[in-house]
Image 1 (spheres, rainbow over the protein chains, first blue to last red):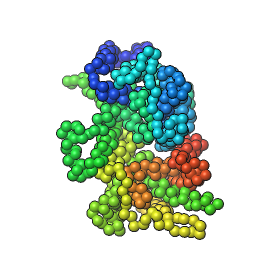
Image 2: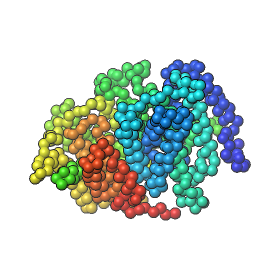
Image 3: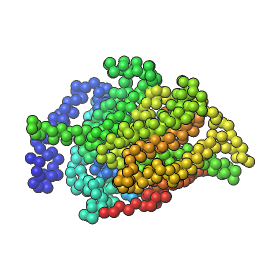
Image 4: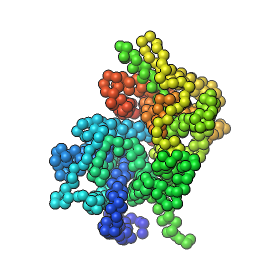
Length: 349
Length: 291
């Protein structure tokens, strides 16, 4: 079943009928979801969808091409501000503005990719980190971008469709997310993806086999920045208000954490990682309202810690998840899935 | 001219705390190739331990500060023993993620315990005392920081050059397998490295605390210290010190002459530009991968 006999079997998107079945089931579930869920749930779903987009893009860079980036909040900010400014100042329609802003982010990604060609490990980490910090500082100083006060997003009107509620945004976001996920899956299965994997695993060997290192590495940065830009543009409208303080280093770290928790080099892993950590992020904001656990934590805080800082448990939970995942399953949730699959394959023997 | 020299002096003063954190990161990176993002928060928690000893348990300051430094050493060793040592098949990315995770845990613990508001550290030296040298102001705290940084450099230099443990650390760094064959307990050496590094970082934290004391206080110095270490090549102690002072001076001159608003990010721009020209830092030989 696992043996591949020709090239087309290797590049096809769905490897078996089971995958097709679950994919269709998932799509139907996503389509039916807004008719069952409350407005707040849909708001959460929108956030998760944006996380998924950015994390898939980051995974192409980190998981497939093997380059570290601690600056994705910068691309995210470029996408968000670019879309809003292009719509309000240049009067572009939404999709044109979104794609153009994402392309600007991709251009920045390409530029950041150029010094990254010669850097690795901690050097690359500090260079990308510096980029992310600098971008948000610069955006915060430019008057056109609203400076420190931030910007309100304009009304979102696509053709005859005026998007107002979270449900409308859901219907906009989910098709984009699904499309981008499938595009990423296709990308990683074909020539570019194989080239990136080759660069990650053995750069010099890849180069001797004729892979254009410079082209593909900068391309990985550009694609990744493009995804982050799209995510940022959509994020601005879901939040309805953007300011430079949102796009912090912590945000870049969270994106990287989602990639790692989900599983490096796996699109499905990215989706689950982004959903899990994004969901935890939203849930832990009001941790004291969780039944039983909340009251226990309140008592614990009053006894040993302080009640004002209780929201910081979020940081502890995320940190613990990151450390434990790296210690016990470096491939993340995807690694657990592979292991479980292998275990059950020959069960009960 | 007086302004210029005053800015240089301020730059050197700021550079000293960057230098301490840079040194701390280099010590760990040298022996275990881990870029330790948790460095700042290890210092943070030690600083808050000192604060707790002074405020809640009414320890005199000559006991509280040494005790918090001891705590820092223990913390470093414990983190290495319980977390870093357990990592299987560590890659650079994996190590970055683990240390960032540790950083978030420590930061979360501190802000859970103490809240986000600014605290005032009962430090023996007030940050507002200053000394005049001719026309120039230097605060006593800055002088103390500079002295501590210089002492740390000298002691570390002597330690790596002459002590048995220091030699063992150098051997572990140069060739772990050969070091183990020679009977050096390399894992224990790594643990000691973390302890020493945590100690150096914590001294920086204590020296920063009179000026600013809240859970985010170590972010900026830690990143600048990291930038300085990268500038010096990540493996060279003098390189990190040089990078730290250079960054401190550039930052202050930039803030004084060009734009005060972008003062805090200019270091990163400098780093990115510098890395474009010398990808392995100023002081490290460029590492050429052999096939």
